[in-house]
Amino acid sequence: MTDVPPDQPAPAPPPVRTRWGWKKRSLLFGILAAPFLVFALYVFISYNWSYSSGERAGYVQKFSKKGWLCKTWEGELAMVSMPGTLPEKFNFTVRDDAVAQHVNQTLGQRVSLTYEQHKGLPTTCFGETEYFVYSVRVVPQ
Image 1 (tube, helix red, strand yellow):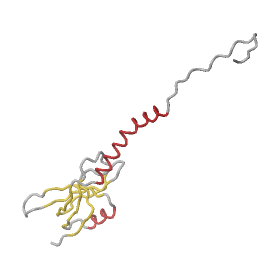
Image 2 (spheres, one colour; image 1 turned 135 degrees about the vertical axis):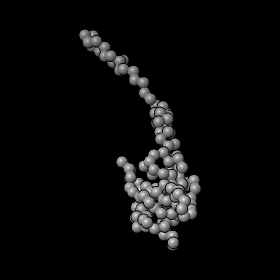
Image 3 (tube, one colour; image 1 turned 30 degrees about the horizontal axis):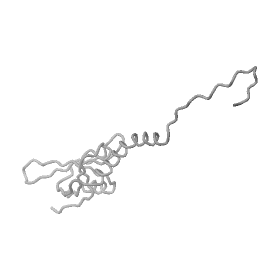
């Protein structure tokens, strides 16, 4: 016990603090971080794993860079199976600027687009469509 002179009151005991131990803090951090990590893993898998891949041939009739915040190259390919029939439209996204420049150079020509389909991407920052073109070649008439 400390010696307190008789004319002064005894000092107040320190306030009782409840402390979170490191186990409780790490549990709280884990609970808060788990949804973010699951979402990041989902985006990583859906971005890097293609659902399907293939080629489509036709004429690129629209191609522009779109987006408010995330700019992506979006295009439309008109595919004609037989002369005189209505064309089927194939909407696609190009992420690589070099491929986008090649698409721009081949406008008006019959082209073959090689693409991969990525289903389930959460935002349009990756592209407005689920078809991502990574190669373009001109098809001889």
